[in-house]
Image (cartoon, one colour):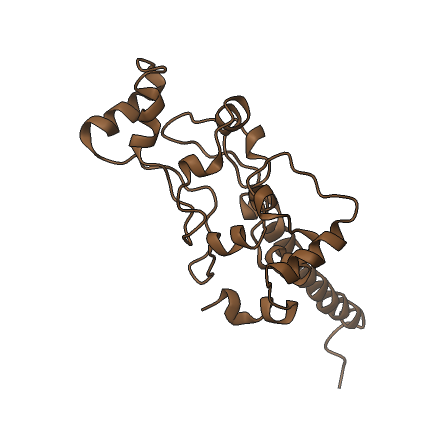
Length: 219
């Protein structure tokens, strides 16, 4: 019986199979890289807000403490967004006629809250509690970055699970005294690990095994 396929067909078949495998691996690598990139995580992308609010001006320039606006951060799972009343405490007297603040004045007149664009948005299946982290010595900067240097607000880190787990596995590397939690310019000492281990015991932080248990964050 005469040969139907040319001998080169075998070589072509092998190249096609191996090429398809390499292509799939490459596409998987590209997908993983995109998922971890700023494009995928939306990190370092300034969010446009209904009011041109600058954390840099208010925190660094005016020295306003985080808790003045985010009033519930120490006792609630949600940091809290400031009501219009908080804005008007100052802006009823300062820049009271600025066109940039018209959305604030309109909210004050109508009683309708300002609809801010959310910057840090975890998935619905992730449980996160601000008060726990704040009271265990995790500084605002650790998660949010130097907001005192942000004229517009952006997400500093990826917020991927691997980023959270890195801290939960080694909490001693990130902890600071509670009285320093809201300081933007606090720097860890040269013996941070010694301080961190001391705070782990003092603040009764659970073991890495418990902190990395699935039901700690996925409830």
